[in-house]
Length: 94
Length: 487
Image (cartoon, rainbow over all chains, first blue to last red; front, side, top):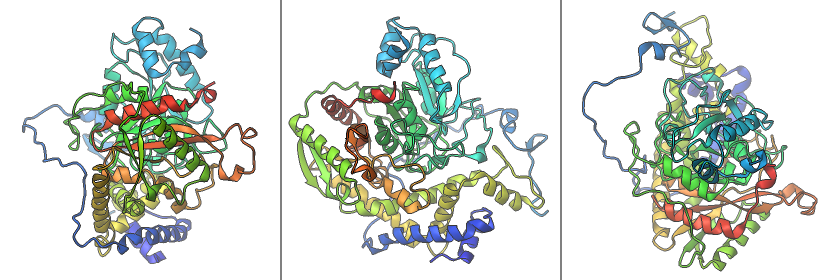
């Protein structure tokens, strides 16, 4: 059902590199799961509204006031690479 | 008190003994710390190295607490069972943990889990599998497997876990302890490393129902840091019920028949008979869409996971794979090296279900099935007080027996996911022992009596106190003894 090309396409969308040895098992396993979950296609759901959340929360708002957040150096201490006051990443167009 | 006597105290009994000065907090903590440090079940990803300062007078004044790895704990490794968060020391503590520590609990250890809480056997952890203390060749369940095994083995008085599709209830069942998933929104999710945000909920794993009530009492409450957090109506009381007169239990045919091991069903029906002796009525009910709950769950949860786990990109925390090339190359290589096989599978599944051309057929439909499940429960709760089922379709299964077949693993969750999709509270209590199917020809005596079976009680939103009372009355009548695996 899901072939190699589709696996590679989804992996690109998910920003996930798959090793050559991961591609065939992924196609097989995804196909099996999708075949199972596709059974929900049998239900008549024409008049049913979707539920994205079971809790009805009417967006609680807080006062728009400045407050203390985590210190910059505390946050940067967890980053794999930093430069000055920011996160360091490779160039998008290397 | 001897070490054995101290370890035999549950959390509530320990809190009382501490408050009365009968035992000292540092003495209790040191005994658990040495037991946890000597653990050979692989329950923990971190164990405290020092005994903390004795707490001021407080409700939980000094009761040690183990916490699932995915809860952020300031300055303490919090890696959600994943390589991609290697070495992560959060700069803040999750609200649920903060509340328990604020009530006087002392952080003892972080517990092993399936990576990002994705799994039903704890075999997906980057730190290796946890062993079931009832039989070390078997899984403890998952994803809160370390929490469940640690409580069962007496390595902690109690533990905090999370449940997305059964991750508190199923390991509690397989390890012979109590696990409670509260109403969605009752406990803050702030600082829980997210898996599926519309389903994730924190809750207790404990030796008995009283301890579950005690922990829940200190967990619930509105938190402005979690937009889905709710005010819980009232307080959680410690249960005292002895009888179940007038309590109506509904048994859904869809979750109590095909696919459930004979031994599990026998223990379930014996518990129903006991409930009737206590005065409850037992009625057959129908949850017509329950058969589709697992399918809906395995669309919705991976979809939310694929979105939540986009944050792990090697930029702000955790590991990075340095590679020649551009930013995208760094992202994709980091995610390749950092995520395990099951997490990759769920990210792929979720990305597929949300992708252009498939969204309506999968994610859109799954959300409509979720509506049907919510309606099914609403309908049955007009006629019965609780829905009861076996918690898991099997007893603990052998390590490695389901890892090659993701779908077979997912089927472990079919009794627990309907409640998760509906956001309703559900508890699992141990209700007896059953022989695994491969041992059917072995006599009960030869196998040591069998492995634990869980009995699930689910009620409407915010029915926590009524569930606890019912579970407590049953617990007293069942008289399950989990003491042997603590020794």
